[in-house]
Structures are given as structure tokens and as C-alpha cells.
Length: 164
Image (cartoon, rainbow, N blue to C red; front, side):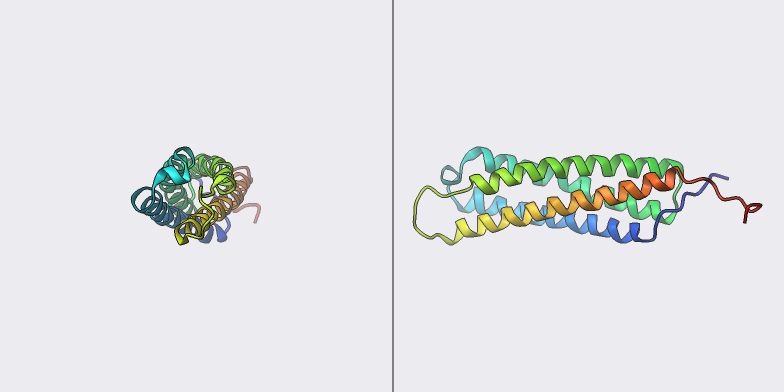
């Protein structure tokens, strides 16, 4: 019988948080696409920040959702293979979200319209970038906590019935 590794009960909740962050990322990315590409003139906001932000948003969402799903299933039945897979996938998610934090910070700082008049879409664009930045920072924290708990569970000595 394979050994079961005990993760903390909160891992399931943090996995659900990762799934929700991934869904928010996808939804906010869709809103950014509609705002920056479809509704607005991309020349006003700049090609590079918009394209890089959209690529990051749509490529990171599946990683966040899958790492959250794997964290939930690992907490339910934690075999060694699932635990190592959760560590690897959460590490990839943490690296992606750290990279996204840098990209979105640069995009938030460099996003400014060419004209000086108030346009609601520019304010919405700044707000969407800030929400994406907050989601990326939240994903870094969540994935890091899950990685820490999973590594702790992986190196925990096996409990035998004789010791208890």
C-alpha cells in the first residue's frame, strides 16, 4: 500500500483560491482584450505593454487553475507522486506570477494616454491592470504557502502504529 502524505486542511482552501485567481485572471484578461484591442486604438496605449500583458494573462490562467486543482486533490489523497507534482506545478505558477508581477508593474507605470483629456476607458485600463497585478501578487503568496506545506509534508517522517 502506498504511503499517504498528510497535508494541512487549509491546502484545499488555498487550492480553491488558486482556481478563483485563475478564473479572475482569465476574466480580467478578456476585459483587457475587449478594452485595449477591440474598443480602443492600440496606438494610444502602446503595442508592447498591451500584447505582453494579454499574452501573460491568457497563458498563466491555465497554470493557476491546474495547480489549484492539483493542490485540492493532493490534500484529499496525498501520494508521493501527487505531492511532487503539486510542488512542481505550484513552483511553475509561483514563477509565472512573479514574472507577471514584474510585467504588470511595468505596464501600470508605463500606461498613460497620449492626450490630456479625461477618457473613461483609460481609467478603466489602469484599474484592470491594477486588479491583474493584485491577482498576480496573491498567486505568488498562495503558491508559496502551498509549496512550503507540501515540502514539509514530503519530508515528514512516516507515522507507524507501533510508535503511537
